[in-house]
Image 1 (cartoon, rainbow, N blue to C red):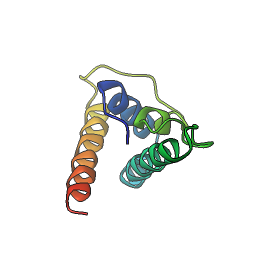
Image 2 (image 1 turned 60 degrees about the horizontal axis):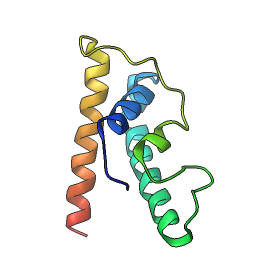
Image 3 (image 1 turned 90 degrees about the vertical axis):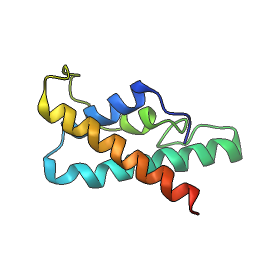
Amino acid sequence: MRPLLHGDVSAAARALLALPQSERDRICIEMITEAELADQHVAQTGKLHPAYGNGSLMAAARTRTLADEPAFDDVEYCLCFELVLRQLVRFHISQRHS
């Protein structure tokens, strides 16, 4: 996956915010996986992945409906933002142990 910036986490959180709570964890993992697959595709071919883009989490998130970005006083948005960060930590830990 390409280096992560605030906009990547925000876009992923906005994609999750547009979903029912019961789907968020699964979709978050899917977006991270898609970003990783796209990054590998770009590295191998020099071309964007046809479905997931350039390998950024933002590109993977933008294949979905994004909620308007609320402020951090929106508890549901904060929970989505936290979920993205938590799954990214899990992803990076698993990458180190592979």
